[in-house]
Length: 395
Ligand SMILES: NC(=O)c1ccc[n+]([C@@H]2O[C@H](COP(=O)([O-])OP(=O)(O)OC[C@H]3O[C@@H](n4cnc5c(N)ncnc54)[C@H](O)[C@@H]3O)[C@@H](O)[C@H]2O)c1
Ligand SMILES: [Zn+2]
Ligand SMILES: [Zn+2]
Image (cartoon, rainbow, N blue to C red; front, top):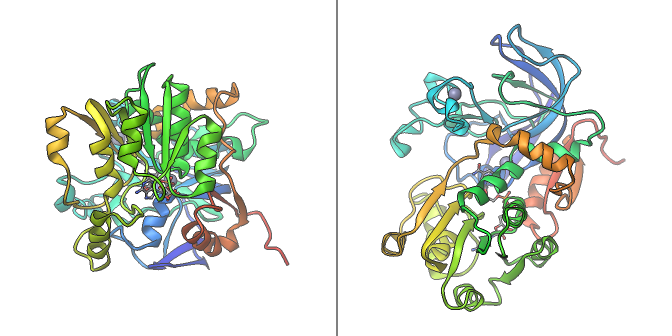
């Protein structure tokens, strides 16, 4: 089959690789109809996530048709399913508490030591996201093996387009969990850093949950426009002092809750970010945490901090004093996708959440390397890229 494979920093290729096979009784094989490139994939593309090997198949946002099932899969051939990016057994201590992205059964034993020195514990399995998370082949491919297929995949009712539901795999629940973690209250003013797909869905979710005002921060005019279209006020951090603007917009109090939907590759020329950038380049620091620092300083006393943005290693210059002295609460994590898909599918069906407004490009799988490059280099215009294995390259 054809699949998008990683070969190093800024080097991804579509190669011919072996077809996946059923290995365990609960597996299923999915023929991929749509798959997306995620901001998290850019961290792999930029080579800032450890544990990658040349030839790894990327992709953790995908859906398709069930073409083969193991004897203990609950799926049947021909069903259309969206697959959560978190691989979860459904039965361990963590899965029983709906903390699916902390599953202790989905990362094979031989891979578990990779993350433990940095995180204290092994991570759960994720599709297409390094050997720290199990080394599973991802779904930017014609076919993919889905372990624990009786737990994760969401069966899609007839009549719904791929594009309506594809983002149930990751970014929609991630924006949703980001807003839940911010514990939105009806009168809240909430600030969201980053107007990529995750930030945009966090904006939409916070408004849906009743926030009185949402302020979205980025520097790409088109992405800010998309946030404004959802009902947010916006700040362009290249033009405006973010903290000053937020203080003014919150009556001098500071905003009630902050959401960092930027993660470990913050842009900008703030001094702390320039130092982080140098350290990241020479490999002595994994995270550019400038947006998070700004968020911690901007939130009001007693406020809430939610971090959906991915961080890989150790960040320094971390405002621990602000966290403690202001009595902030902080919640984060890889998304517990399986906990939210049923509710979110219903909201999509009722027309209460829009999942298509941010899609900018649809490409054949064969054109995926260009998709990565443009999503990376031209973020303003390329807001979300969908890859279609069934689509032919233009002549
Ligand atoms: N927690 C999870 O399970 C989960 C799931 C999906 C994605 N993520 C993470 O969420 C983050 C966002 O993902 P995405 O797909 O939206 O990525 P993206 O790269 O498309 O968007 C990030 C946005 O942040 C903006 N930005 C950069 N520096 C900024 C700053 N200093 N202030 C304000 N905005 C700034 C960029 O201009 C960009 O528009 C990434 O770190 C990704 O890995 C986490
Ligand atoms: Zn993703
Ligand atoms: Zn589990």
